[in-house]
Length: 116
Length: 110
Image (cartoon, rainbow over all chains, first blue to last red; front, side, top):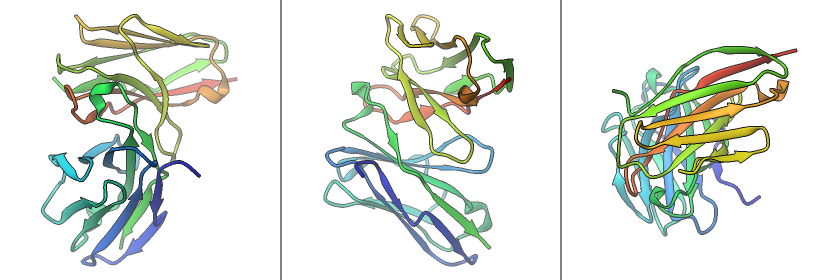
């Protein structure tokens, strides 16, 4: 389909392992966003890409979290040495341009991450 | 003051009722405003953008008051399928990230 694609849809891993989450935005969308949402909670902003650069990474909770985007398209979010509190749904969204143009974000289905 | 603040609810209403959600935001430089809905264990989906002049989409009406930094969503003739959490969303100034409110939960009962 033409929507935002995230993989894997579910990931279960042991505490201390590294995980890599992938987001493939809608073709042509220059802006890409990562959020996480714990059960019953609101969306927590993690990082925002405009093209390949990240003008706002203020939401990354610790230095165990990093993200990159190459070729202005696919992005990966990496969590090193996972902890149980990292368990959440990680959502990726994209928009055609920056948010100053009144462009809404379109979300993928998310990756449900469970740390044992 | 929180960046985007909403009444968490829940709002429990009968079918056919009219329900209004309010939202306030703190950044006077915000330019883009939206309402999203999120169903249980699903991703947020855009419901409608909010324009300065106010806008309507069927049973849904959105209003923006820039002076008061206040956004509203009115749902008329509520349907069972309207049951969801409604998220108020504001951008963090020009080209800034979108900030999502924690949402207002709506439950429409038969």
